[in-house]
Image (cartoon, rainbow over all chains, first blue to last red; front, top):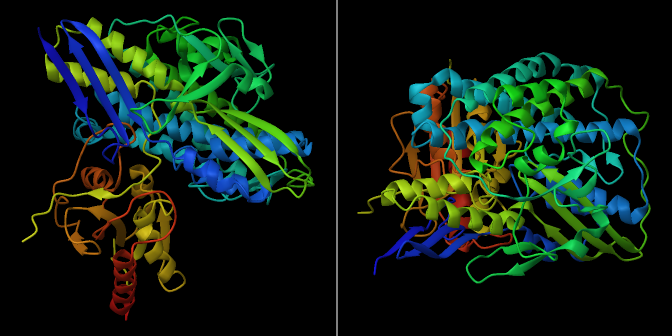
Length: 430
Length: 148
């Protein structure tokens, strides 16, 4: 009887905050556990008792990579409680800053975290040794995303300019216009990225996923829309908890998301958005996808790197259109008046649907907070992929199999290191 | 590039994770007295933050197995950091990777020093362990002294 165990104890910078355990017995996978740490759990408790207006800035601290997802999710939920509707210019600015977050997140992940997998390189440093211009391109794409966050949001990390009702200050037209040339460059480079990534060698692997994404009547949905699946679900975000919930599993600090109907896992993120909103992509983004060999639905999660490049192109095009059409709003924010009630907010974080629900008291203080981040929802899908990846690759050497498993996790760009960021050093202490 | 008379002091970490907030604590104590920045520690942002800067000091929590509150000074311009973890797992592109990436790309400031402060508690919440807070106070005073 042969038993093989794959164990990776430090998927993130902190041991135990992201880990992988696979047990194989007689060529059958008997156990798969992908364990992660999720900071939102702590923040939910922390938000209770605070004023509604504090929620966006506090929620932004959950993640250094995708703060806008948390900030805007909280804002939309509060506006839902308070009955606030924002003007089109404010709504456009929100989409613009969110495009910035997609550009910086996808730029970082595709080039520096995911591409090395396909090039047989250990990491981004190895990539820089063999292809400096490529790394420089990635850094510039990332910076353009950050510049959008800084100009609209006041700073690139944990933006401070967003509030319930809109913004504290409207960005000046000249500041916004400064983004034009960079975005034109980024559009061309995103297109080139899709082409470059399409030349990678992809494992032969497909799954019949249940996809969930926001869908909007006009746009490739980022910060507004209905919750839609490829299996017939089509509901407003206020019904999120009627269809989805989370459960505790022993091996993970995070709760795992599941659909109340059916038993199969569901997938969020680029593949889901792409499949559900393919007809909402720009002509150029659709053409780039087609040239990169993608049909309207992609079922191979390893090809998510190409889909992220297509989404980066879409986000750059959207951002450019918003920049060129920008006029300073008459007022930076609508007035919000506290009242009791329950509200929901849902947006497409770079890694998928991020849901917020708050209950407020009459004075606007938070009675209850619920934040369901994309990575906890994708956990079951990740474990399901891992199980099948291992089963399909039992002939690989242990190191190669472990590598393939880590690659399968990276397909989801899981957000598991929004926690601590300290240096791990090996020092000989005399 | 000239090194300049004053360093840019970058505090790295997450002040909502106890001792991981030591970089932010030092920055808070130096605010208004030296140019400062507080960052979560994502590598590409660090490379961008120290662009065109002659002298950079980075303060970060560390885990090296030494006594809690120990301050380790590293001259990063002189050579690689003590053996770290260079891997592209998940979001793992942090300070150590940023330094080596910048070195490869010719974007490392001519003078770059890293102060690692040994952490004890990395749990959720605000507030430093007493030994780590004492180290932050000591290091802030030393950095101000150095300026004079």
